[in-house]
Each structure stands twice: as C-alpha cells, then as structure tokens.
Image (cartoon, rainbow, N blue to C red):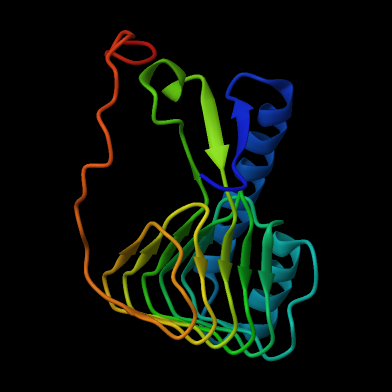
Length: 191
C-alpha cells in the first residue's frame, strides 16, 4: 500500500494513539447525543475532535463517527451527510466542494496481510479525496486510495484502488489478488 505507516500494536507510540482514540470516542459519543438544533455546541465539539477550526461552510450532519480526529483535513464547502465514519489514523483529506453521502466509511487503518504480522502490527495509509468529488451513500474507501477531482463514487461501492479524475465508479467486486501463506498459528491472539 502506498504511503503506508506501520506500528507495533504493543509499542509505547501506539499506546499513545489508543489513548487518543479512547478520548475521541468519548467526544463523538457526546457529539451524537446533542439535539439536532444544538449546532453551535456540535461545531465546538468538532473543533475539539479535529484539533483545529473547521472551514466556515463545512457541514457535518450527525451522527458522525471518527476514531482519531486529528488527521482530518476538510476543504471549503464540504458536505458530510449523516451516519459517516472517518477512521483517520492514516489521514483523510477532503477537497473543496466535495459531497459525502450518508453512511460512507473512509477507513485509513488496517493490519498487514501476512498472517504472522497481522496481530503484531497496525497499518495506516492516507485517503485523499480531491475537489468536487461526490461519494454516494454507504460507499467504503480503503486505506491509501486517492479519488481524483470531479469523480463520482456510486452508492455502495467499495473503492480499494485509486480513481482517476472525472471518473464514475460503481458496484462491488471480488478479486483474488494472491494467496496468503499459512506459516503461523491461525487461532490469533488469546485463543
């Protein structure tokens, strides 16, 4: 995966990440309990979650979920509809005038594919959504993906590779990329 970062799950550096995730989960819980009419309180909590002011014309409809918060960069006039999850450990940048439909998941973190490393490490890679992109309802964007300017991602699509500018992407696909070696205990941690 391009621009991938890797942490040992038991490292002091990643423990600090987990502490931040716990704090942000608490903040998003509070955010999503606010009445819809509490726009000023919601915006103040989003500023706390993101660690910086939001552009004036950004709209984020509740409920909204994020795990880290500090790695989200939203352009001017971005619209995020309800029920979206921005899992931003690897970084998420959304360009100006982009539209994010309801129930969209932007997931920047995961685990290595190789079985011996899967439980030992956490991986993350940035998602870049260029300007004027429209992502339809319930689409999922995987770590390391760039969606080019002006593109449209259809409802329910799973995007696991880069999308060129001015392209329409629809549907889900299943493609066997390669076989994984079975060189380790398949029971996983604590089993």
